[in-house]
Image (cartoon, rainbow, N blue to C red; front, top):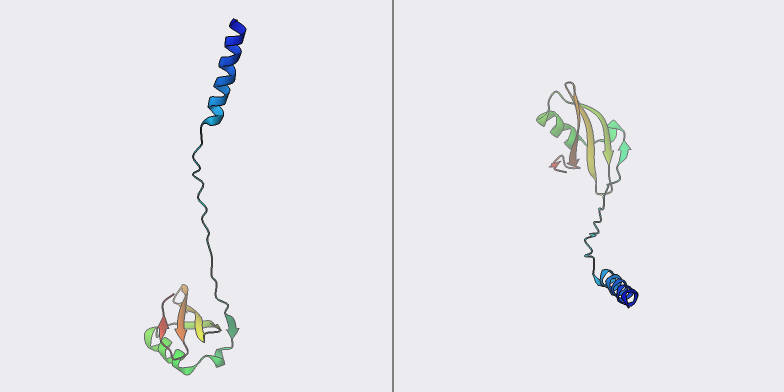
Length: 98
């Protein structure tokens, strides 16, 4: 009789562990990186408006490379003193914040 009661307790106890639900806290996070495609252009192909805007805003800046995308936005790699950086402008010489 003791074995029967002990067996029943074990069986009922094992059902209790399977009946409990485990909360699912897995969150799915999607990260999408949008990278614009720029193609390098020759220094002679940079519009005069951009060159003038660069000389007005940063007189000591040296234009190293220039790139253009499909929206006619220019990415300018410049050197200012011992620092290098990027500027973005449209074809009319207006600065774009990115």
